[in-house]
Length: 335
Image 1 (cartoon, helix red, strand yellow):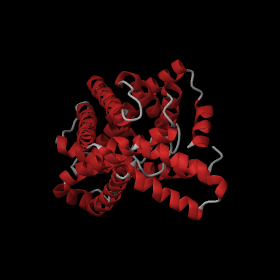
Image 2 (cartoon, rainbow, N blue to C red):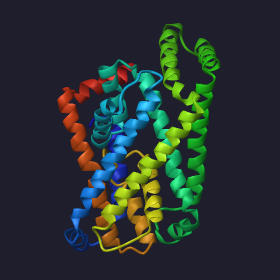
Image 3 (cartoon, one colour):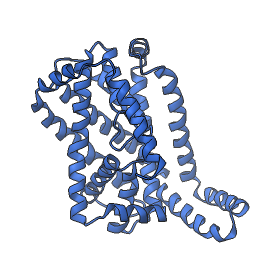
Image 4 (cartoon, rainbow, N blue to C red):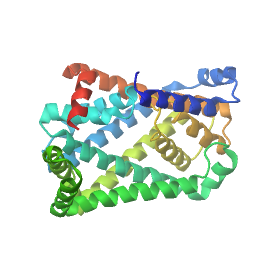
């Protein structure tokens, strides 16, 4: 509460909520929410948990060069990460699952964080892929949403960022000795002597976490798994859509998924309040969905994405006896 990042995120969330709900009568929104057929949430939640399981399976393969950890053992840790991301600011759940993994399996935080960053880069590439698949339709967004803006330019910029990051990680993984020597030269030149040993040790562990990227077969598997994960999440969008009186194509929901998840990289209040909702409503409006219905769908979808996995992650935290504030402070100190 005392950190400026929290208040900045809260201010951004409030701005996005204002953009999402301006011009909307609350009575219309309430009526659209009341009339929803929420039995469709059950298959949606089920397919979403399947996507979380696929994330644990992907992480299992990324971690295998460090230590073989089964998918079943990683699933609770992934759920705890979701809990942290949904409750704490600045995606602290990623750091939280790294510290949990160290406690459970003894894998250094810096090494597991390297694999988590690789996951996020692949996720970003897939999200941009969802946008590019629908680029011919993007003109409808820029012309009628009044909010989303020039998605084509944003997609090109985002592609450069994510593909550039992926290229850097691949280069580090493919030439570990050269990368270590480069880090050593930089630290020797720019860092005080008392910090050099710690930084070099941290760099060695981080480079070890990238070891999985040395296998082209594994890279392809991670990419395909990432596509499957996000298609499963889009399937949840599709199931929840049937609770409301509108219908758009699966490709439109892929586009919505890509845009809202790219928007959630913007700093916001915990749980991506506003940054998820405003672009989601704008996408649906651009495809002719009435604003009250679009807002009801997006808000209920957000809750359905947030609540079940957050509850499950909280349950696993209680089972493991984790005190999140203490664990995060320890993780930040080490990372």
